[in-house]
Image (cartoon, rainbow, N blue to C red; front, side, top):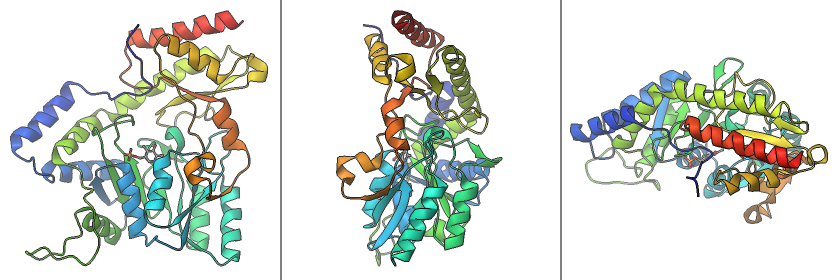
Length: 378
Ligand SMILES: *Cc1c(COP(=O)(O)O)cnc(C)c1O
């Protein structure tokens, strides 16, 4: 069997080794240290916000952002149904109730028209909307212009789940700079990684301070340990921050490699009626984290599953788009406003190997297996 080709594996090498060894040799092994401070400052500068708090995961960042925004029991939080479970889980940790909203079919991103309808309905019924949490799917931002306008109009905090979109922009403005706060993720499969980690980004100094406090066990500033709140152990370690700093020096290069992969898929599937690269034609604003295709099996005569099975025969990983949250057994009782788009995307979409660490040989293997599959189906 050939070696496994993954959709998105970590892309690390000599630069990362140098930074991590540097942190080890500096003696800053205890969780916090100068690399954490520098990493926060560098990411804040890159995204153009005044505060960044490095945390142990994107999920932790979402959890604390929601708590700091005052979300808790008795609140409803509006979020995208087309997302990874971490978004909905973090909402649930606070005691609030997630309410799922469907997407537009072209981008898979939160539909602002449905969002407005949900806000109006809930307000009319006298319910408390604790926050709106839009999700930038696969590295393409939501329509922040419309979604921020709705949040502002109704006075609802907006916490952006930009876990997948570091490096992307909306109308020239960086993902991670919208709303009251945004979060990004440095999990192993994301556009850049700290092995595991995340960050909260905000222009609100009080919010950043509150998150920092909650993330370090909610210790009062006295020498004996005194606590007036329930805290968490959610900070990022100094060693991992060093890895993040190394990755950050290579972020643009890694995005360029993923974009080249997107271009290659575009060119390849342009000749295949019934298959479209997911997310629309504008790749420039996108960080191209993952490339997916949407398959109209009435035209192709084969399904996403057929292509996935064919790739797997050569040990090549591919996966459906996220299974919508409203269709997940664990959220069976949650409310949702749906339009059928996310269900259709789940049934017809397939995410393909997209990582920046893919070698030339691996890329050729993906395309030669896909060519073989199409030849057999023609
Ligand atoms: C990866 C991801 C998260 C969670 O980030 P972790 O760092 O893995 O905890 C949250 N939301 C979305 C949309 C993600 O893709």
